[in-house]
Length: 91
Image: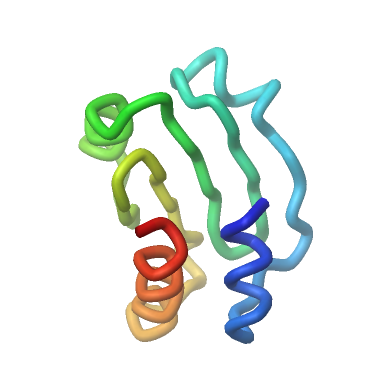
């Protein structure tokens, strides 16, 4: 939720944000998950668990215990904006 708000405040698109934790987390081991049309955000119980999940996913970005997975429609330039906001918000 905090990252969705931070992306919105930064002018980055996060359309159709919705909680998918109950559906996704039992399968992948996260503790919270939000999907949007541009990026999926997953929070894990530890950095190590986030790293294990992130290793198998293309178009992803990890900051500590959070993994972002980008839609293929998000350009590399736009990804950098999301990555910068995520780094600033999480650290």
